[in-house]
Length: 240
Image 1 (spheres, rainbow, N blue to C red):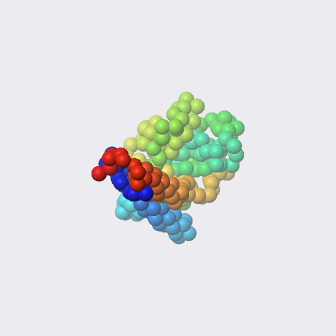
Image 2 (tube, helix red, strand yellow):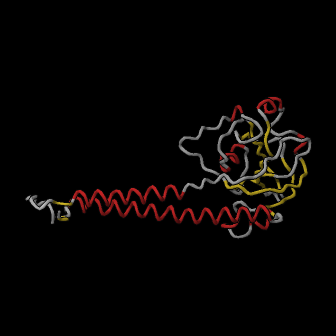
């Protein structure tokens, strides 16, 4: 058996191999980044809360998932209900409302969950007792862009499916809102909504993806070698 590389097999296989290896390396790097982020989130959650203004005026890369606190006035007349199957029941909703934390500055606050029955019983978007002057502590969760499979919000029923801060802010008539939702960990007056303990919703599948890309690269190499092995009596001249 002799190894005689085919020109076209080489021309097509080399770029494909480079792409597969690059994708595998990218997933390894993403895994390291994700683990660093998860470690920072764990440290933030265990640390005392920092002032919200201090965090929002600090380095941009350190804002997401920061543990913060703020005092302000919560507007109980405006809010959205975000479908939250991970809440207290099978069809709960997170109640998100604007908090004015001084000088007209506003941030969206996730007050916690209500059930479908409680949603239907509400006269407004937020239980009145939860509004007014409050102190809130929690985690800054970044806005999420809707994916191509995401359901569109139903403003008439006040039913949202994505933590899309720009869209929610626009629906509530708010401007210059930071691209975060402050997930509250402090109880609300009146007992509703019910705060939900923060847990990172960051998938960590990068190792499996890296193994997949590197495995495909190895398979491509094996196929390339087997395809270009020639028997001694092979008279073909397709190689170079």
